[in-house]
Image 1: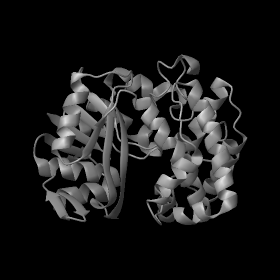
Image 2 (image 1 turned 135 degrees about the vertical axis):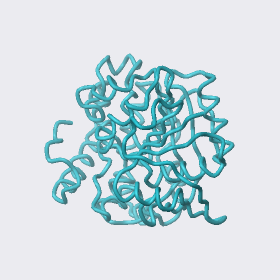
Image 3 (image 1 turned 120 degrees about the horizontal axis):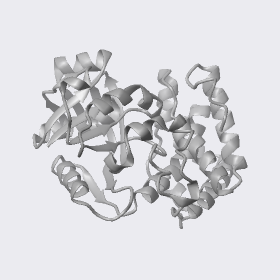
Length: 331
């Protein structure tokens, strides 16, 4: 199987190093700048509790050099997706599968959901450009349950979690999804085969759509957010709004916010990915985590005063710091 990773950052490097070490596919990467240089010089590098994982890497800046792939794993942050779209398109053949290993609501999420209408979500796919270039027929859905960070370009630190949930956007099972599951299982991941990948995406979002931006706004680890009664109350209100939205799009969450807080509490004092991005001066993934929830709520007629407040606060916070576009005030 020919596999290419687009975006060899913390998650892409995590997946790439394990795949390369397993040696059961023809692996390549599309990268730029210091990450490209590091891959060419040092290969794949992953630091784990069990010891380092290293393997040679085939990396290029120009996707067209690699030709069509069987599997393209997209592991960029959501704000960077539009910029790597030409690379993804260059890797597509008639039967290429695209696996987005990304946070939040993906560009394909609304397709086929009657309640959301025929138009792609403007918050994550302005003008439908991504959906037009990478149609849902190419997509197999993915949810990543792992915490990683970059020690330096191309050098990944694995902190916790090893889970990947894989499933067809339309539900059910398929040979192509099964082959991806087998590939990733052989590489050492804890793979869950899902027949409801939209729900799995929504369930993960249900928790981190509040924790990510609140930690970014406050500069706090998650344990301190959960310790604050006022913040817990605010998170609860926003999560109840998201649960009401989920019920209207076939993604009903049966747990309570308090149930989810107990799960999050077990993870300890950790920095969310959005807080790490703020500290590093990188663009924040606000649209896919919060903006999309507000937009979906508008489409299905669920009012979202708390989610909207969180979006507005975090949006302005990011704009003042130059890590969120000043033009994105429409949702």
